[in-house]
Structure formats: C-alpha cells, structure tokens
Image (cartoon, rainbow over the protein chains, first blue to last red):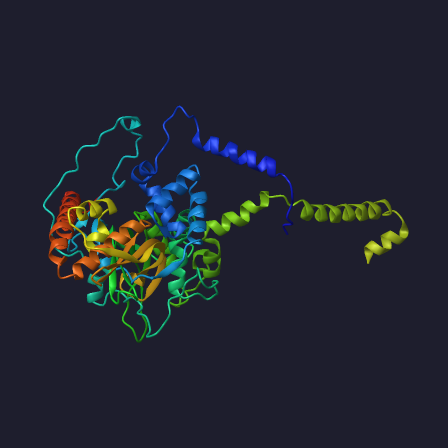
Length: 371
Length: 137
C-alpha cells in the first residue's frame, strides 16, 4: 500500500530543472524541431499515436521530444492529454478497402488484383549500418511508374467469394460498440473490446505473445493474407450538419491473417481469421495483433485454450503499457510507511524465532515442536 | 469540403484573400476536441473503436444568412473556421461559383497532383514474385 509523503518540494523542483537541461543536452548542438521528429522519426510518431490512442502527429512529436525519446513515457503523455479533451463523437467506420495504398503485400497469393506493392519498407534491406546517413545525406528522387487505376480489394474479400474463408462477424441490429475508455473492461470481453485493447496495446508485449503462438503456445498456423498501409478517409456524421462530413485522411496499417481451417458436420471447412489495425505504418504491431486476436478466439472456435496468448484475461489485463508502467514504476516512490510495517512484522517474527531456537533444548519446547 | 479538409489553413486563407468577401461572423467559435475513430472487424465486419483523433470545428454565418459548418482533423481551429466560411460561401448564390473557381478548384487540382505523384512513386515499387521450382535434391 502506498501512503503519501510530504516535503521535498525544493529538491523536486530542482530535479525537474535538471531534467529540462538533460533533455536539451549539449546546447551547442542544434535543437530538434517537432517537424524533424514527425518527418524523420515517423515510425516513432506512429507508435506513440497508436499506443497513445490519439491520432495527432504534432502532439505525438511533442510527446517524444518532451519524453527524451522514451516512447512509453511519450505514450503516457499522449494519454494524459487526451483525457483533458472533450469528445465530439464517433467517426463512421473507416473503409480500408478504399485505402489509397502505399504498400500492400500478400504472402498467400502472388497474383492479386491491384498487384503486390512494396512501398517504403525495410524488407529486403541488408540491415547493414549506412555511414552515408550520418550527415548531409540527400536521397535519390523516387522512381516513378504509371499508376494503375485498378481497385485493390482486400485479399480476404477475394477468398471470401469462394467461401474458403470465414466471413467477418456483422453487427447485430442496435448492438452498441464497446468502449474501454468509458466502461471498465469485464471478462469475457467481446471481440470489439478485445480489438480496441489490442490496438492500443504495447507492441513489444503483442510481439512476444504473437511469437509465442508461432512457437507452439497456442499454435494457429498463420499466413499473412494481406498487409496494407496507406491513407483512408475519415467521415463524421455531425448532427448540426445533417450528413457525414469529410474530415481529411489518416494513415493506417491493416493485417489480415489467414489461419488454420475448421469445419464441423454442419459447416464446410474454411480458413479462420485474425485481424490487426493500427495508426500509421505499424506492420510488426498489426501482424502481432492479428496473431493474438486469432489466439483469443480459441474458445469461440472450440479450441483448447491452454496457452497464455489464448487467455483473454491475461492478455487484455497486461497489454497496456501505461497501466503496466504505472504499477511497476510506482514501486520506486516512497513506500516508507508500508515498509516500516513490514519491517516491524519481520523483527517480531525474528524475535520469536530466536526465542524458540534458544529454548529448543528444553524438554517442553521439544514436545511442542513434536506436536 | 473533402478538398478543404486535405488543405492547409494557410493555403485556404491565401486563396480566400483573392475574393472580396461578404460580411460574416462566427456562429460557433472554433473549438478542438476528440473523435473516436472506428474500424471494422476483419475490415468489413462489425465496428470497433480503434482510437481517438484530434478534431476541430466551427460554424460561420454570412450577413446574407447562409450558415456554413467546418470540421477537420487536427487542432487548427482557424482551419475549421475557414472551411466553415467556404461552406457558407458555397451555399450563397452570389459566391458559390467564385469560391469554387478561386478556392476549391485550385486546391482540388493541387491535391490531385500530389496524389498522382504519390501513386506513381508507389506504382514503381509494384513487384512480381516468381515461384521457384523446388530442386530435386
């Protein structure tokens, strides 16, 4: 238990001043701007927006600067900021099928309508440090080719036409959409709530849990049906306007995982699915999310749920890095009162132990011990 | 309005300066808040809450009575106000053609050029994978 302490104001104030200086670093070195962070550390910004659950590049860049590059601290700042803002409403669900695709690959089909598009990717790089990036690097102008006007349908929609893959669950009439920022999470949680939790979950945690399913802890035999990254339009049905207003676009990454099939005496066998969606270019995150989403469907699909990744209470309760860091890091705050009571108890136990040991040779004590 | 939402506040303001604007006033002062963004399970299934985005809104009334609404992603309230002003102008018989010709049209053109270039750069990374025949030993 934590009991508040008083005092230390002066030291705290000075510590924060020192922090401000440490954050700035050597003042003969140029200060980093928010534009520089947003433009040149874009994937860090994407991660802070995703896990901070707040799409705003400028705020995420500021959070990264303020947190000295500590992304979990930056995510914490983004979450704290969002808690101060009023909510105007809820967007229309985004249509990822109409995404202006900047990258789109499938590991299951090589010939997909609209084609495989590598886009800006680390894939197929050699992972060798590049000294030319150290200073004054000017990249070559990107190559360009005639753009196709063909649609890029989701790969799962193509498989779905033949009934080879399960269809996405549709909303029941009048069903509300769960929101864990408004209602505390209860178990069992429906898939909408699970996906909301996973979308803002720590990438490292999801990666480890997704990896564990591949290594046999809740194996579900995944293939990447499709990963796509690009811009989608956001619309909001504003009451005062009376129709869905376009608000601009956001960047999203979507991962469709195609998993081991199931069937029964009444249903023909078909592939099952796991789904990942996150702000920005967040491929590792959405792939891990899709693996974990599928693992968490174990009970629904009649599979034995024995592995950690299939345990929704375990996953959903430990996935949030702001909650996790809050509880872990609070241990370093003064616990003097708490610790004093532990110390008192320990001293008492040690005293009793010493007395018992000292009297151990006495016949009465021997008898007592035997009983 | 989609075109305006994709433009920068400064670009809209610069275009509007080329028009002799009618009298107008804020009906709702610009304000910023959040919008919960939704996705769909599997891309095409039941909706779920993905995360929030900052959003700004404003409303403007022309002296002639037309009311325009402005909504945009981000915290730029001035941009929301400019969009609201354009929305009001579009409804005005005297100004709809002018605002389309001098503001929205050029911005649409600019957006299309930007999108076309991005699409062409993306298209250059289109790949054809060949499946190798497995060796016999």
